[in-house]
Image 1 (cartoon, rainbow over the protein chains, first blue to last red):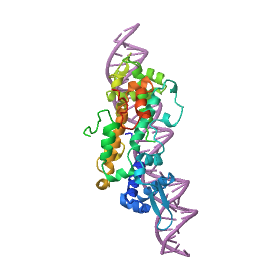
Image 2 (spheres, protein in one colour; image 1 turned 30 degrees about the horizontal axis):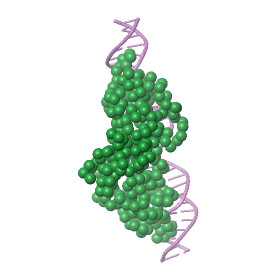
Image 3 (cartoon, chains in turn green, blue, cyan, orange; image 1 turned 135 degrees about the vertical axis):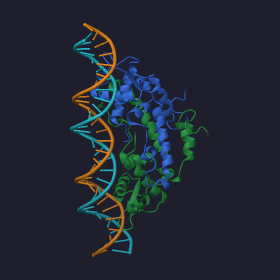
Image 4 (cartoon, rainbow over the protein chains, first blue to last red; image 1 turned 180 degrees about the vertical axis):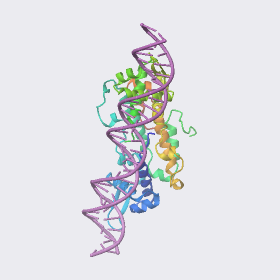
Length: 158
Length: 158
DNA sequence: ACCATATAGGACTAAAGTTGTCCTCTATAG
DNA sequence: CTATAGAGGACAACTTTAGTCCTATATGGT
């Protein structure tokens, strides 16, 4: 578990679809057709992404959606944030203090760190990269070189 | 969002509680009293942790639970895994292939990388550390110094 | 031997969140 | 002025999660 909601997952696919068409205006139904996701759902997602400013819309006939900025500048964290709100691994991170423990809760500070690490992982991948295919870059520079262990878990082979 | 279930969150607290008492045997009700979590819930969690081998139990009067190995050797990822199953950010990571896209899904490989990075973050913190309080080590090297970056995250100092 | 205490395991209920659909309103191109 | 397309919100079905309870089994102490 520890899973992204399906809607958010779709949201990333939808964003990637827009990224593929650069700055072209795509209607919600066009996106639905291309991604295979049900039209009303795509519509809902695009509205949500629009509210957060990740995509911009044009109404009326010939209207549609496009990304508000370069796909390289939109991270997965941005999309997740737009659709599910800020990443907060545990309740005590988002909601302050109604935790009976608090006093003897050394855990919290550590949770915040874990949370930050996860957020970092999500920020490090852009929508553009999702379109491009497996990211050598990411693998080489981040997971291997740093994000991971000191000796690099994933591909030492850098 | 992108949140751990509350039960898992409690599970970590329960594990930390056992860690605090070293190898002493604690009954479920004792743990409940110490953590402030409802007794039946604690009981349920301990059973779950027992099934995964993270804690060992002794039945009968004077029975109770204790960690099966040193708290240093149990990571948050272990606890999450025990209680919610393997970390899988998206469906396509755990369940193979019923995704209409698959063909033009460059996303998947990237999801796997993000997933690995998150898993890594969870593996890097032990239950023992949750008890010890804020991890200077981690803080200095990761959040402060870099958190993301190439310079070694949690304990470069290894 | 018996009883009190504890865990094992599973059934079950209630609450909450997630998904997905639909309807009405507004804006724009032709 | 009409067809198309987004905006916004209501809502119903479904799934998951959280928490409780009950019965069976094991063990220590009297």
